[in-house]
Length: 268
Image 1: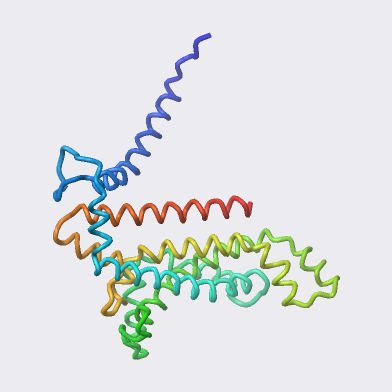
Image 2: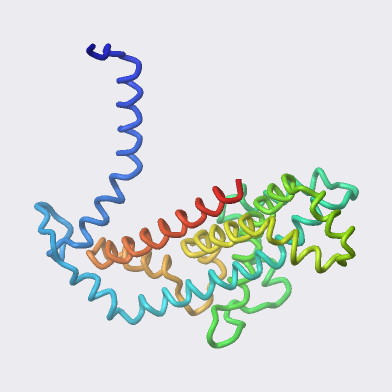
């Protein structure tokens, strides 16, 4: 028996295909041009070369910017987790005046445009006298590190708080009945229960910090990060090297998103 043609179903499939093309076609173009065997971005495509990845591997400025971005992302994760996880516990376990307002205000860094956050942090650090280049030699300046941590702490608070809301407190009560103290209960019962949310939030903060440009632009000192380095190259025009580094970032981001999705699935 032949399937009956349904115009509504066909229209929905067409709309879905159009949406996917709109979202992913630019990414496909970037990947294709990264293996395009020509120094200019033009048709027809001559695919099959990896020489732009070789050029990228020997670009000292790009490598230094990538290393700086990785260090910045790792430090942002440490700060966001160090502040966000206790903040989520405070929201979940304690009642205090203004708690409802605090729950909404904690989302403010995610809602505000990055340029507003960057200008605000720059004004604050100037007020307290913290130089943009202050910090240890092997890490970016402290202002940009603290700025990324402050801007992304909301991600950790919201993710961990949502998990704590679904956590079975009876497990902690059972641990206390077995004479475990509060720290032992936290390490053996509570933390394993919220670990997927903590790791997922850490991966999300890492990804967001890696490609953050608005806050970084206002707070970075002498060291460029990878997004700012790419932006500087784009001022001279799009080159295959830019497409190569964009493809690498896309691959790393995709891997991070896949890991985050698996962690969130395991949590559920």
